[in-house]
Image (tube, rainbow over all chains, first blue to last red; front, top):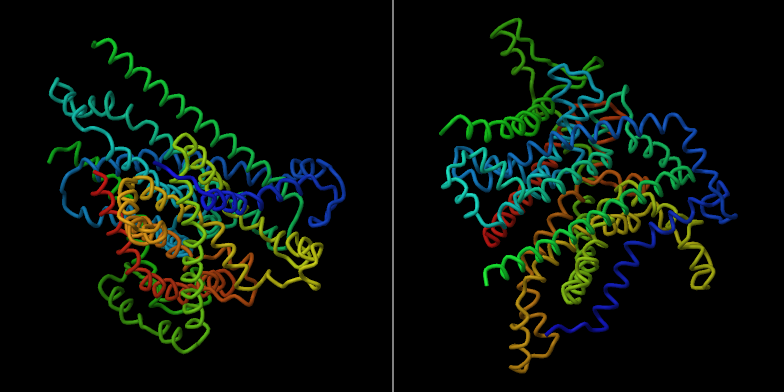
Length: 273
Length: 298
C-alpha cells in the first residue's frame, strides 16, 4: 500500500521548483534585448548572434569538445577495466589501495587534484596544453565510469558468464559476447558522464591548461567574474538545451529497451508453455 | 596469475598510481621546499646529475617552514575553520531540503518514478558553473529575488545576500542537491513498506513510525549523501569565489589565490596537504560505507 500525501506532493513541487526556477529564469533572460540582464526590455535573439560572432568563445568550445571526446573515450576503457577488476577480479595484491584510488577522486576537492596534477606535469617537464587537460580529465572521470559500470556488473547474474565459459568460450570471448552486451548501457552512461564532467570542469582545467589552451568553462568563468552578461545567458541556454535533449532521449531509449526486454521475456515464456 | 589478468589489473592500476597517487607525493615534496623567483618558482629542485651528493643536498634543504608559516598567519586557520563550518552547515541544509524530495519520490506511484528520477538527474548533467552563475542574477542587490520581494512589499530596502555566506549556503545546497537525493532515494525505494504497515497496526503513529523505522533504514543513504556533499564542499572554489565575495573565507579559494595570484607554490602545496589530512578521515569513512553498501547489494 502506498500513500501519496499532501506532504509528499508539496515536498516534490517545492523541491523541483527550487531546482528548476533558477535555470528557467536564466533561459528567459537570454532573450532579453537589454544589456542589463536584470531588467526586461523586450524579446530579442541578439545575444545569440553576438555569441556566434565571438571567435574566442568558438575556439574555446572547439578545444573543450576535443578534450571531452578524447578523455571520455580513454576513461571509458580504463574505467570499465577497473570496474571489471574490482567486481570480478577476486583478490590480488593491493586491492584495497586500488579501490581507494577509485573512490577517492570522486570526492577529492578539485583544487587538490588540479594542483597535484599540475605539479606532476611540471616535474616531468610536460608542456601544459590540450594533452595535459586530457590526461587530467581521464584520471578523474575513469573513476566515475568505473563506479557506474561496477554497479551494473554487481547486479547481473554471473551464471550466464560461467555458462559461456563452460561451453568453451575463452574469457575474452565470454566478455565480448556475453558480459559487454549486458553492461553496454552502463558503459554508454559512463561515457556520457565522463564527457559531461569534462565539458563542465573549470578548476582542474585551469590548473592543467596553461596559457596555450582555453576551455569553455575557463572562458565563462573569466567573463562571469565581471558580472552577469547576456552572452553567457545565451550560451547557458544552448548548453541546457543540449543536455535536456540528451537526457530525455537517453531515458526514452532505455525505457523502450526495458519494454522490449519484457516483451521478449513474455514471448519466451509463452513459447515454453 | 596469467598475462591477460595481469594486464587487465595493471593498466588502470598503473594509470591511477602515476596520475593520482604519485602527484600527492610531489605536492608533499614541494610543500617542504622554499619559494624562489624562478621557473618553476621553488627551490631546491632535485639535481640527479650530481649523484648521491645531489640527492643529499636536496633532502638537507627541505624543512617544515611553510607549515610553521601556516600556523603563524591566522588567515589560514580562520580559512580552514570557516570552510569546515560552511561545509557542515550546508551539508545539514542539503539533507533537510533533499530528504523530503527523496521521500516524496520513493512514495510516488512506480510509473512516475523514472520521470522524477530524470528530473533530479537533469540539473546534475547541466554545467556546474552555469548553475552557480544562475544565482548571481537572482541574489544580487538589483536581482530577481529583491525585485520580487520589493514588488510584493515584504521589504522596503533590497537585501544584501550576494557576497555573504548565505549566498554560499544557497549555492552549495542548490548544486549538490542531486548528490544527496539519489543515495537517500535508493535506500528508501528498497524499503519494505510492510514494516510501516505492521508498525501502524501495532498502534504506532505515522510520525513515530517514520522516526523508528524509515529514518534508521535510510541511514546508509543519508551517510553516503552527506559525505558526497561535505567532502567536496570543504574544498569548494567556484561557489565562494562567484557568490561569496571577499567576506567569505574558504580554504579552496585561499589555495587558488596562493597559487595563481601570489605564485607561492610551496605554501599552496602546504595548504593542500593540510586540507588533505583533514579530509583523510571522512574519505576513509565514505569508502567503508560504499563498500558496505556494495556488499549489501551483491
